Length: 206
Image 1 (cartoon, rainbow, N blue to C red):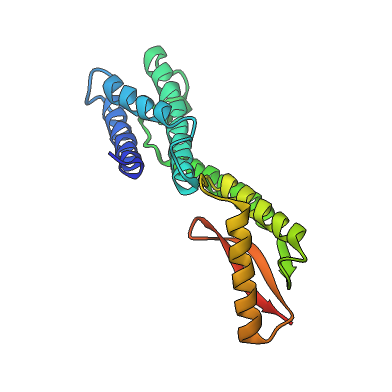
Image 2 (image 1 turned 135 degrees about the vertical axis):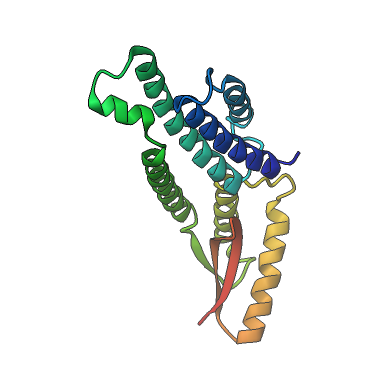
């Protein structure tokens, strides 16, 4: 099973667990769904370090983890109320209500996290430089290479075969091509995120 397939399975398991808890708290089951909850926890633990996932997968995993945490917090409250009895009117409401409020909280938490990640990504991808002669501006090309590698690392991309020499050769060829095609003095290079992947963009600079 691939990471994406297992994350989809986790999503379905969390949805199933919510249904089983709703049935339990509604009186339709005698015991809480411990088996399903154990399976969900096992998958969450498996991917907790994030090393097996790329940037998009980690974001998806974190969203589901936050949703499960919100669900679990509410389930624990309802379990306590169920065991101790409904002592206040609001307890009775909590004991029989659906799980609508946490959906809103989960969405808000996921949105806040995405904004934070986007901001972090923008900061990592803010590097731009102008290149006219790769041989004369190796320092600038080196900074561009370092910025790109740093952005790829933040995005969860692996670069086992990345080397400065091959990168420099690519930039030199690209610079010569764009200067010839557009008759420009220099080429502006920038590191940008596109469809969840880090890309090196180049455009003519007069």
